[in-house]
Image (tube, rainbow, N blue to C red):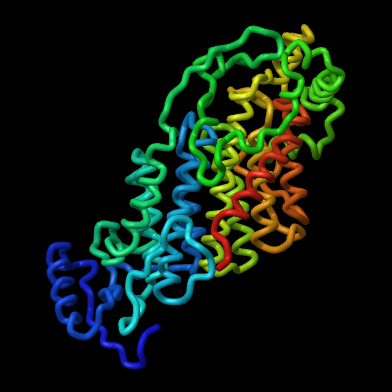
Length: 464
């Protein structure tokens, strides 16, 4: 902590050239050298426009991330969840470095959180905001280079100046933190491309039409091979159903499979008379598959933002919440895609099971079918991971909140829940009502997401 009468010298900021700033930085270090070994002051000079911070930097940068999700086209949920994990792990480590420097470290960092300044110097104005903002911007433009202008505009919106203005916190904290997380994920297999070969055997997944017209349209068939952030591998928590049947012919001959198909045929049909009005509303509310929406990971990040605001969480706790959630969703996506593509059965979608398997070509699902195998549900896996992190991080499942949706076909914009588990279970079953998944896809997806999140919580960002 700072001494009662600290010696504080100004650091050049916006309006001072970077070269001049660096020269003055060296001069400052020389002046302080005889007195202390502490690193330079992190004081912020005046900006071109006063920033109006709301005290919620983690929420702000996740709103930027969510907006970037909306601007993506043709991107699967796995890469989006990975991006969220990289940004939020970086934000968390930057916040941890800030806490170690000026307060105290309550939780272990994800990678590293070095102290970068300290007594007899003083904490600079808006320092927590600046540490988080520079780290988030740095990682976002690497993750989404085509969105650089948009991201930089949002930075200026937050700080009232360009990101290029000199700030000593960039080389001291933000850049090293961003480099560490970026380098740790650089060769994780996410950029590998793998083609998919369709199996014509009944029961095996095949393209379902529209934008999913050929096997090359299969979304991210190799994502289950991406190196996880926390898990040992994507196969660590593989659920058994329906892999236990071993072959497609045994699976399709089973009573369990026939019951699954019959249920989705009744409840998931476009013109179903068995599906209730509320089930139809839930089906569309949780969809968010189309370009222009924030996609399933973005919806859960948006709900988490609302809950964090409602609970008035401090920045440190908020950063940890978003980091745990994003790590769990990223590894959940890897585990989910392992189930979809790396197990003996790549289960065909209900539309194929009914139109082809039951010879009912007139049957149509309520919503569009995603271009990857059915078992298990990605929505359900994300929901199970989200529910588990929210419950453990906030200490209770029974917290009331209101969720929102981007889905243009949803008849409602908001739905209110009394617990995280109730929302997660509705999210999972919504895919059955939409006609794109079987019930066991939802059940196994929830279990998988919960298992992944429990492992992440038990092994990362532990309380010290």
